[in-house]
Image 1 (cartoon, rainbow, N blue to C red):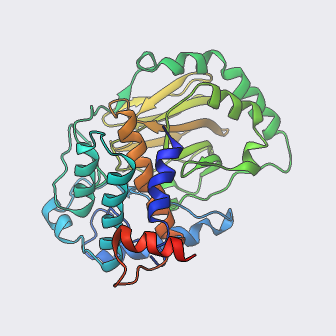
Image 2 (image 1 turned 30 degrees about the vertical axis):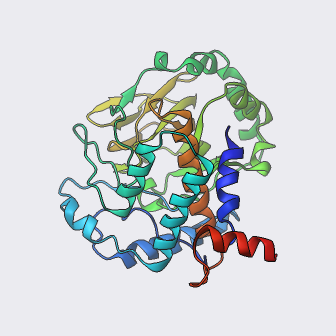
Image 3 (image 1 turned 135 degrees about the vertical axis):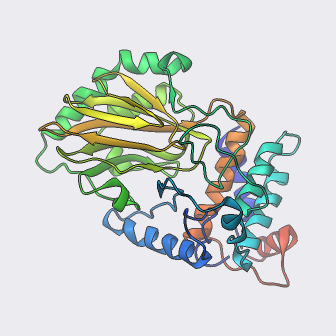
Length: 350
């Protein structure tokens, strides 16, 4: 299964809602749900430089004095469109994943709605409401824990050589297209190969060998993406958390000078060319480049290995549906035509 099951659930629910969905999670320190809605609007606007819709992210600046979680949960207002979204999620999971054990995904929805309290599982672990329970949580993972990492490192010259050719092109460039540039800082920029689960053709054409390698490795890519990330000298990414505890991230060193480091949780590590660092970005993390030249890494986001295949596909369905809400693809549901019956009726009317 894979895209087919995600597509099935989405197709059943496609003819319904207006505008974008209010974010599932609320930025930390926000007590007003409207603040989260405004952040979603800003995220969409921030993507205009690349011509692509930016995701609403769970990224938040790290603070050591967080407000109590109970206050956060009370702040999650169930607006009509959010009620519609979560009902459609429930219906889609039932239709597209019949017979599968999705108890953790069902609870994931409850965490997103603020019905359950999520738990930090270690020092500086700062997960968000977009939470899957029962997953191992540690700041750093080791390369030997993933079968595909060793092959990627062995073939890393493909990525490094292709990037050098790209970097020598005077027309090449990185985009400052994060929706959280206040956290990423002025020295950060990226070239995205995949975003929100979709490959970006115009950028993939610049890195055909790298894309081919990534596909051959059969990495269980998740809903965030794949990108080359640049950090200019004398700059760094501020301490923050990406929130979602069900996605892991690998950084492959592409062009790494000395005096560059990344801290995840309480431990600092440095990149090496052709070597991978694996981290859980639901822990507080930050980066720094104190050298005199740019630092380049390839960033790959993928599903946490403790998720089952069905859970991965169910979560992909949820985020695919959420993207459709936020992009306006799904029209506002008419009150008298709720649920799957209304969806089927409208489908046959078209």
